[in-house]
Amino acid sequence: MAEREINSEIAGLSSTLASIESVIDIEKLRGEQVELEAKAGEPDLWNDPDNAQKVTSALSRVQATINKVTALRSRIQDLPIMLELAEAEGDSGAKSDVEKELDALAALISELEVQTLLSGEYDHRDALITIRSEAGGVDAADWAEMVSRMYFRYCERHQYGVNVLETSYAEEAGIKSTTFRVSGPYAYGTLSVEQGTHRLVRISPFDSQNRRHTSFAGVEVVPVVDQSDHIDIDEKDIRVDVYRSSGPGGQGVNTTDSAVRITHIPTGIVVSCQNERSQIQNRATAMAVLQSKLLEKRNQEERAKIDALRGDTSGSWGNQIRSYVLHPYQMVKDHRTDFETGNTQAVLDGDLDGFIAAGIRWRREKK
Image (cartoon, rainbow, N blue to C red):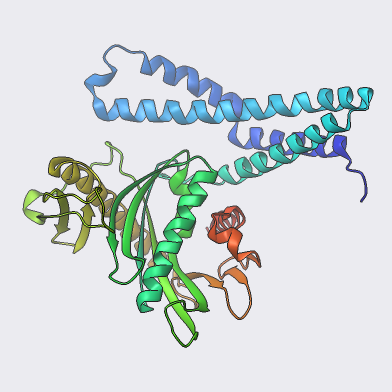
């Protein structure tokens, strides 16, 4: 195997990071940080909670971006020194450490490069993800649970917080649906490209004749509402039902009617929450989820008007975005970007970076 041109790779990474610094205008961000810190320090800031929320959220985002870029630049600058010391001492272990650090930085800079494409109004927010079993019976319910596990593993890899708000279990296996919140920088912008129908082809473990089955799971991704979004919900437009939380069993299943289901009558949107300890907490969380879904519905209606004016039409695959084939061959393929891999197990274990990066770039090109 040819020896790596480490200095050349370091120079390439430094150049890529310089391009990112130029795109995000790091000096302008530092100026914004100073202004936002001054506003955040004003004694009367919280007299206007909506404005305070905007200021503190913006400051947090700017600080996180500056800290990330600064840390990456520092680590790149350290690499030539580490390499020089390793070569001077003839330490193969130290040189191996340099190569590992180089690979780690390459992955982080690639991730940051994709993040620079996330400039949508809500891209910086947390994401609210709902997964539902669609056509395919018990296989679809099992597939919906596999998809939720896939996203949980992805979030673990990226240190995103996950809070499961509600899960409806199927009778035989798997789930009918689940809703969970993903918290982290640009969680919505990153995961929004996953919205659509995910198709699974495999030998069904529930078929005694070992026949191949096709099943579907739907993924919905909406941004978590901000206090400044002003999504007003009239009490007379909602119906609130309480019920006993359900689950696979054990002490985690409530013995009181603390779970809450809210139906928004004008739109027919139904949301549920059962993870909190009290009915009041579950109602508050369910209302927040309903606000997020109403915000996304409003945004979709606005986008639909624009699409109608420009004659935008969906592709022949409709809402189906990705196929996961486990039999007769192994392949996961995205129908929008044509990105694919034969390592199906890695994908199901949360290795979605390639698909998400390709999706974000595809969306930017489409716009």
